[in-house]
Amino acid sequence: MMMNYPIGRPVNILLVDDDDVDAKAVERRFRKERITNPIFRAKDGMEALGMLRGTAGSRNISSPYLIISDINMPRMDGIEFIENVRKDPNHQGAIIFVLTTSRSEEDKFASYKLNVAGYMVKDNAGEDFLKLVNMIDSYWKVVELP
Image (cartoon, rainbow, N blue to C red; front, side):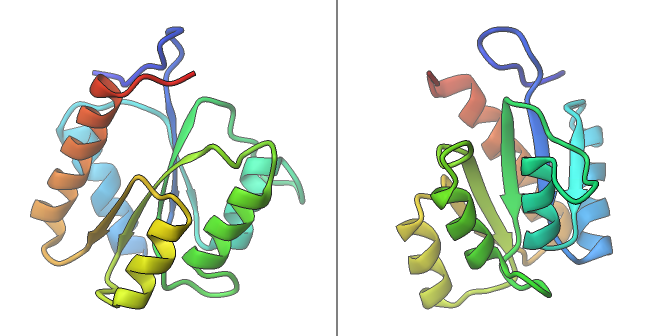
C-alpha cells in the first residue's frame, strides 16, 4: 500500500533522526505495514534542510512530502530545523510530525507553536512506531490538502 497525494503521486517521507536504530525501526515498521512510500533519511536538521532545498550536493526531495523529525540531534536540533522549514516560503506548509524521546513540556509547546501535525514520544519502539505509521496512514486518508 502506498499513501498517495490526491493527484496520484506517492508521498515522499523525510525521516530526520540521528539514531540509526530508531531510523531502521521506523523503516521496518513501514515495510511491515506494507506502506511502500519512498523514505529519505537525514541525520540532523542541517542535512534535512539541504535535502529539502537540494543544496550542498544533497538529494532533493520532491513534493509531496511529509516530515518525521526527532528533537535531540547534533548540529541542528529538531526545533531549529522546524523553525527553518516554517521560515522557508517553499516549505513553510510542510506537514511535520515529531517523534522523539523528549517528554519535555518545553519541547512539546515549542513544537506545537511551530504547527506540527503531531508529537509522539518514543517509548516502546515496536508499539510506538506502529502507532506512528497508523497515525500517518489515517492522516492521509482523512485530511484534504490544497
